[in-house]
Image 1 (cartoon, rainbow, N blue to C red):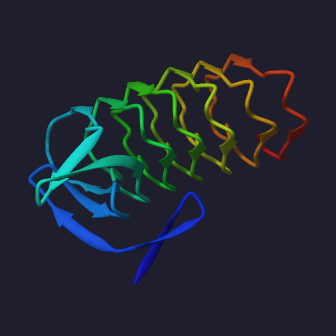
Image 2: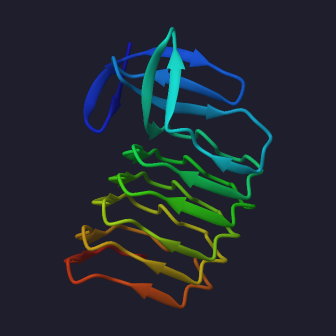
Length: 178
């Protein structure tokens, strides 16, 4: 079986550790498949070691943290993609750090993260998929990167507290219900 990350197919090798389930993607890259710990302040590791080989964490998989009771997340350099529904329903998430290197934020990635108040998206993000911040009702401000050309459908739908959005000149298309 294979999985696709960043448009490339990878052979599936699963790795289970105490805090995370990982998926080995190739000879040097892995993704977080599932968060299993109960710690509410999460610093995602930049690497994982398996059989004396170090793999760089390049993705946070679909639904990896969904519904977890977490308060803060630091996404390290090296992560290129945040999967769809990755932090779905993490209503306690209040502090989010997305490091340079992330290129894609998947659809509904932060759905209903109602305690997020402010987000700065790094310049490395070239694509944010539909409804990525849907229902982030506490969100008051967001800064979008110069690398973004499209604001997708429903990006900020039901973000009732949003009063400040910095939209760069590079944006040429804004989807419905954005």
